[in-house]
Length: 120
Length: 107
Image (cartoon, rainbow over all chains, first blue to last red; front, side, top):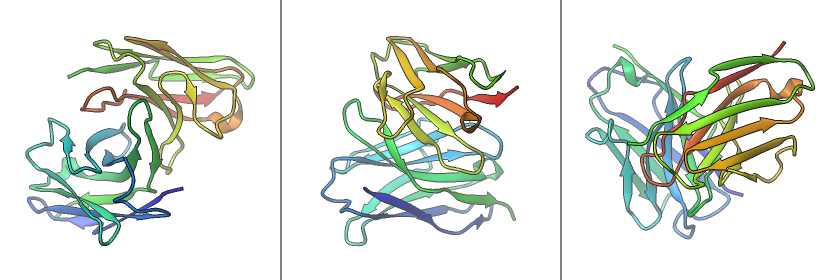
């Protein structure tokens, strides 16, 4: 079973770029027909889907974040990454990486989450 | 974009009670609806996908139903370990929007 682990800075300054990496273990990221994605949760609030990348390379982003988000995959390191530019305090929260299956299969595997605080 | 509305936003019930949470989509989504359970400080856990298919390892007291725009998550007999926030998510087309969540507590 695939396992996920987020990593990256826990503190980011306003206007800078938030960068997180998700390391996949238990299988190859390049040989699996999955969507590799990110979901976030502001403190005390609900879940927000950020975006996903299909294993073929197609990307899908939340319309509200599309202008600031990039999701990419590094198959040599079995990792995928999130970059969110021009952050503000509203981007503070726990960021989860996750795997979504194809067809009727939903988001079935999640990382433990990484808290990112945007503050000067 | 399709909006997902859950109700109620919170509920309190006794151990052994039957609990029902509803999720309504602003447009039809066929059966592309999932339910997640999130306990404090933990990542969400998939309970049900395709509106009514129980994820492997999830207790059978959880069940889902519905299609199109109206969906239901039912806990047939509430247990203390079911205290959590529950979210629905539609995933027919992107964006894969979540409902706002329903917090379940023990009375």
